[in-house]
Amino acid sequence: MTPGGGSGPMKDCEYSQISTHSSSSPMESPHKKKKSVPKRKWEVFPGRNKFFCNGRIMMARQTGVFYLTLVLILVTSGLFFAFDCPYLSEKITPAIPAIGGILFFFVMGTLLRTSFSDPGVLPRATPDEAADLERQIGNTEDIANGSSSGGYRPPPRTKEVIINGQTVKLKYCFTCKIFRPPRASHCSLCDNCVERFDHHCPWVGNCVGKRNYRFFYMFILSLSFLTVFIFAFVITHVILRSQQTGFLNALKDSPASVLEAVVCFFSVWSIVGLSGFHTYLISSNQTTNEDIKGSWSNKRGKENYNPYSYGNIFTNCCAALCGPLSPSLIDRRGFIQPDTPQLAGPSNGITMYGATQSQSNMAAATPLLQSEPSITSEELPLPGKTSISGPCASLTLGQPTPPSSMPNLTSDSGLTDIIPLKEEHEGHQFLTPEEAPSPPGMLPSGSPITHSHTMHVLSLASQDSLHEDSVRGLVKLSSV
Image 1 (cartoon, rainbow, N blue to C red):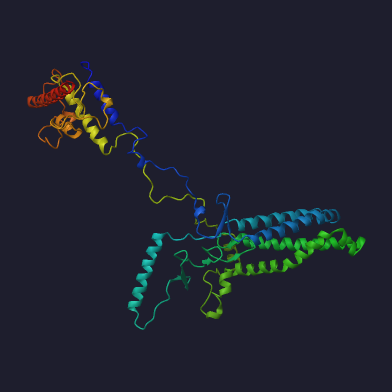
Image 2 (cartoon, rainbow, N blue to C red):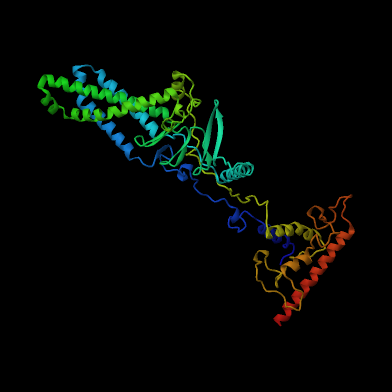
């Protein structure tokens, strides 16, 4: 042990013990933020839907009829452009394939837009919202039952609102746990409440609602024109050929025209009829669901009328086809927010817990023992050691202790003997780092440090030297 070498290792030891920068500290591991890949909302969507392209495309789960629609349109149009258009453009005009191409791309665009978009799905209530709504419904029913005198009970799970002077009932959805807005309905196939629900169309593989109704109407309208266009010019092609080679030879020369004519003949009636029906609905500002149920029929009463109609066909058509497109309410590509976010652990060592805080207290009091010149320059006796000259860094748990006849030098008692805690000596203010005494000659003239403070430190040093002599005597006796 060299003179003057006790303070340096002591400082290094204390500061290394209170360091919290180590990544293997057991106190930091519970506070570290777990890295996990966040999920998007479409991955846990409760409805019966299919999603593609990371949630950008939304369809119903039953898409078999939709693929049949695609095949019929693509095959019929492809045969027309491959076998009929070359002859018609040569014999009549090149504008025929151009017009057919424009109609074809418009039909495909509106079909895909209808099938791949959100029809207006309403988000379901969260568990807290559903519980709060259930409490409100229960309180309302209890009040109605208690106040009813003639045994009358209002229909459960309904609300009534007034729209343009007409009473409209809002029904409660037991699946989505919400009161559906006016004109909304729950689709049993997609298992979603859809705003301004019209119907579920298997031919487009999606529900038809507020957000895709205009595209659905433009699809069936343009498909009607395309079907009539192809059917008309296929018949023209067959007639022109039959005038040259005969009817049978014309059919043999262009067998694809026969297939096109058959498909168009059986489909044109339903397509044109559907387009006419939806034209009537748009002109009166109704939905298919409302028309089938007869919600605004005069049969229910003379005072029953459609509160959503503007009273003008042109205005109703503009509202349905040219109005602003409302945004999606389900945010299917958004990330799921965790309920209780985890907090990251401290990284700068300022916040300490458990034993680290006690070590910092010991390090704060250490300069007080090293600042007095009356204390020996040898290394201070540390608790739990039989050898005093060992380096401070070699201190570990489980070191040999003195015999039981000697004072027990455990870590807690030794620390209390060397450094009295502030709670046990409330009258002594020398334990705080701010009021630690400085060496002689360095004290200012107006210093608050008194002589009693220094004498108390010297008495502590004398007690420490007695413990050191006792330990050395035990070592000599054991060696003899």
